[in-house]
Image (cartoon, rainbow, N blue to C red):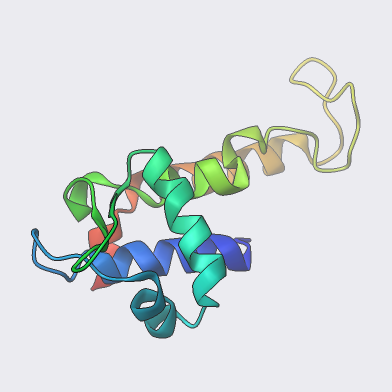
Length: 131
């Protein structure tokens, strides 16, 4: 249910959570740990820096580190800018008029699954993923 990009981003932040608070890791080092191409992961980490999840520092001793404690970053925080999971509110069967008033045959069941999944993402922290 999560793209490879989402998995790489989540694992990268989990790796960063293992560093000391003043320590940075380079994109290549992180990429090697999470099995992602370094250039691709570097661009992804820059996107997460723009979202305020990581701090980027150039130069010797630079790289990336978490912008806040791992127990304050949820998987939802990581995935939302990449996968737009909040938009998973459409009809499972693709109907444009599916709603509580005019539900499709699986509307009630899909709504529950979607809400449970989003709750899981919002309640699961990077600290938990890193364990």
